[in-house]
Length: 460
Image 1: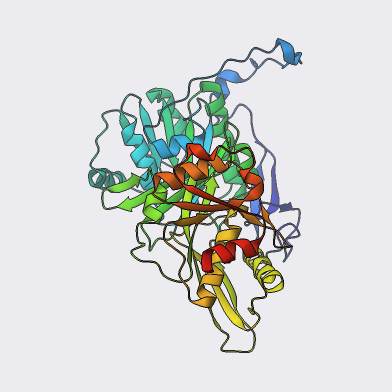
Image 2 (image 1 turned 135 degrees about the vertical axis):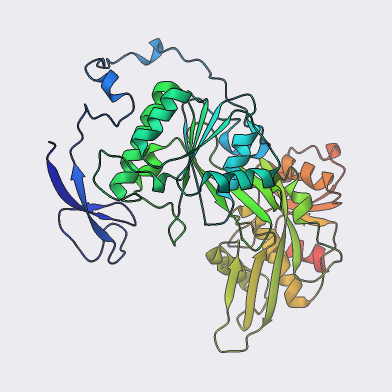
């Protein structure tokens, strides 16, 4: 019989303590420590992946010179979803462990079931601990797709799951969700810190030993982070965040961590009655509701990973009704907005101290590209003076504290995207214009060195 011991775990961050404490010293949350019974792992227990066959046969690893290690590029699995392939770095890597997190009702299960139904050339096992077989079948009927090799398993015990996996031998495994699984090796409830860690460890060992990619759906906490211990995000190979407003139709799949690709890629979907539709040209959709030129609107050219986007920056500047002016931003860093307002007041002589300023990035996007600085300043000045910016103008430059216009990266991609969408003029930094072949583009480029020069060109 294995020796038992009791520890206290923080349900928010996963920190552990030998005794109960009211406030977690790691994350600062109150009353989050829960007592859990921890059982020493028995290596001969019949629950872990292939435990009975691996005991006594594991060879000790030996150090090797890095030049002697042979590396071959592994072929990735095409998921038949261009947006998911992009955020994964080109496809699904064999033996990888991918974690997808998001708010309840955002569409995580729908996305994973679509992926499972689209892999028609592979045997896919979809494991659900939250829904019955009939509920999953109803969703599959709504998606309108049928896959002859997609198997559904409604089970939460990892020992039973691995027995079915050993029998079925799938090519891809999807788990919905990791917080619902429980292992017999740990005497704790499903969703607890020790259970999440143990179940993830077993799935990780299975993925690495067999080369079968495993996709995990994870719950999130009230502050937006993935529920469970922080070590969960360290253990997996890729962490994807599925976000968006449930009241809007667009969903964004963002890369938080990726061992096999870039961590700044972005995938965009549109939620429809028949499932999630891939948005191949997000700029055109984000700008589709512009029917006329209105004050307080400016178009900025930004980049998300390797994808150029043209987004609409909306600003509203009104006299402050109460004593303290409000500064509010949605989709843009509030502290950076404060800085840009200070630059406008100090360097351009605008009186913004007695005005409320509201800023919004249309479409529900959250962006932190410094190239949007110039578009934010133009939108604020446009709303303050109630003068509209011409509809064929876009902007891409960073604004410094002294009012200078600074260069941004990969301007050629921004120019090509603006030209493709029919824009006729773009304001950029004069330092970006050096060495740039402007004859290649069918768009008029306006280089500037100071913020005042841009405002003079836009508003006269």
